[in-house]
Length: 294
Image (cartoon, rainbow, N blue to C red; front, side, top):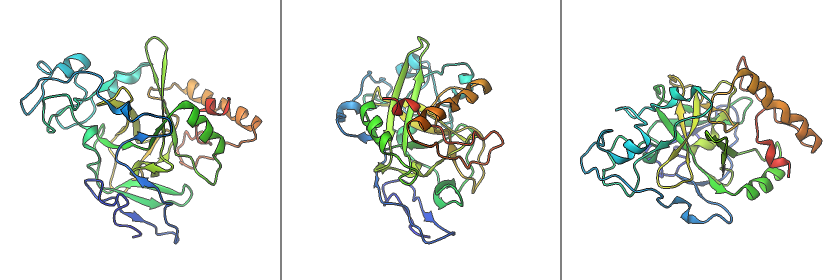
């Protein structure tokens, strides 16, 4: 074991680091539980933007809680995501949790992502993908696992950082795209290179066991929450799709995701190979090509 807790006591549970392959240690970074403001981003991005409920009882219920009435219950009694099966169309139901303006206590069942990491996870060295993150306990389908935290940055800053990326530096920049029914796209850029949490070690997979869901608590800017898409066994590596799409892509659309490779090569950049080992592996890691096209 290299480190018994990479979070240095910031998480509610320790996140140990192990390397059974060589003597390498993870590169240094600032550990943060939630997203922080990057360059030219105001700290006010995390200010409440909608009124809270007046529920003074221990448990908010759908027929009385104004938050649930406005946005619908998003979790069951055990905290598992309810809306995931509803995203089989092009667009998804938004997730809004009770926030700091609400009268309900921390035990409210509509407070899940904001409670942070609750599961026993472990950072480990993989054979072909650098560092990874695996679970030390079974995880039930639709359970919240962790938040992808880092620096919240503007599109201009994201473009600048993308231009500097190399195979050696690694890529921790995630661009989440939310598609609205009006065909508008809301983009959220989070970079976990310099500041992040345990989620920065999660590798991409073309057949992932986690899905990234935008969850809003105190801000119009979503928190990038990772939920289990199926039951996950003890010791299994965690993975999600780096494309940042929160919708189910058809096979035809998935094949189209690789069209940006030619554009990257025209800019003198080679796509990074994917080693997820999935039967449907695309062969390369996805990335938002628009960050290179300026």
